[in-house]
Image: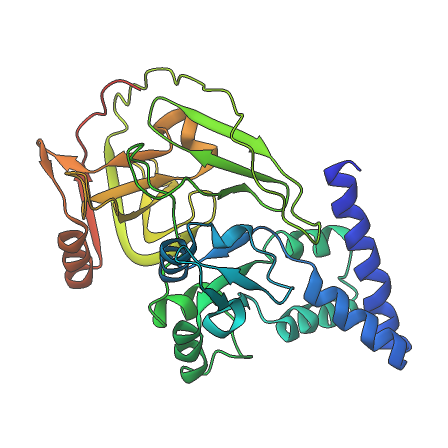
Length: 321
């Protein structure tokens, strides 16, 4: 089935179920509505802690595990672990909030297929550890979570982002580049591997590393080297990173400034611009921050923004591709 048509079909089903849930709330309708709300999600994410802990124990990517099934997983040393005793597949937006949004939109005569499609594109399940789950619950975010990104930040949960260092010991994993329909595997600044995968099947198929390399053209920044950082954090879904909002010299929100996390490289801890897809032709996808050839640490940037609220800086031109 065509991916866009599949999304249309799911939205049409939810449109009918929401109408029936409000107008004709039989037991069967309630059960069907509840089941569909729970099952429909987009690609599986993982916290850094859950991803690395699971990989160290099993050598596998937890994001490839179907969160809806009960699993016993064999570890590297021949023992086994009960998946759901150590981790939990967390709906980043609780189902009750998703339901409330649909019901409210229907009652206000605003519920359409396009409205539901936009909601579906932001439905994620994230593998987190049981300890991280307890932190969310302790903060009151078990069922009441109007802002999932803020909830994760307050609980100290960082979503795993694949390393850009091609020599990393951890396998490359999936970064959401287009909601619901597409994942990209990012490697070095000179290569980009990309493939598509259907994310609405019950079984998440293993990714086959058969994408073709693509060499980027050299990027020249000319006069667009001045950026303004604001003391406001946002989640860049396309780059899968949390960071400070970043405006260019035209006042456009072009990126978030996050911390470079590859501990084995010299850039570890440095502020890194993670650009939105609509600006990648202009700026690329990633760009380390350097001012007069001096790297700006993320810790220093954080202190500046906490003290001043914003920070304007002219970034050294990026060389090459």
